[in-house]
Length: 247
Image (cartoon, rainbow, N blue to C red; front, side, top):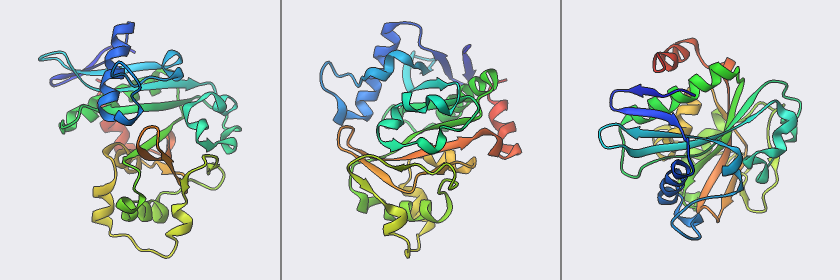
């Protein structure tokens, strides 16, 4: 993927081991529970992924990063990170290119919406260049206290569950079956949206869907839900905005 700039931010592909280490250091600041040594968040998937860095061009500070694992189709779904936690056998028959988005994080304390715009612009360019039909991954909530996010999980249950034909099944040993446990609850929508991580809100606004349960990931110190976005389901107006960011 070629460089992409908007205002003061630039997205580019990691080109060296040093670039990947920089991403791993930023991830460690966000996913601190997973750090074992050297202040790095790293795993075996780093070696097979493409890493995207978003930098502030004023000082070359890394402000955002994520990694992408391309799959030819659903027949390769067991290769992905998410398959460690979710039974994704329903997606095996998906017969188009897919990309797993992983370890998406923004430098703590930075809230400039242009960071997210540039990051999604980079994703959009990759999707268009590679004719990708679905983006997916794990969307993480900070901490492992399910009680802190009951409105968010109730809203997910009410509006955003995966189509039955793609719905992931339970695989991880520690899960919160929110669709089952919160079946009769009604969410406070304002509070629910405030509880959701920005990346998940963005996926949902574009037509994304989630699993019916959350994984309690003690290793990362997070709760996460499987999240997918079918490219053809993105509203036309939103597609125009995304593509405007890559011009």
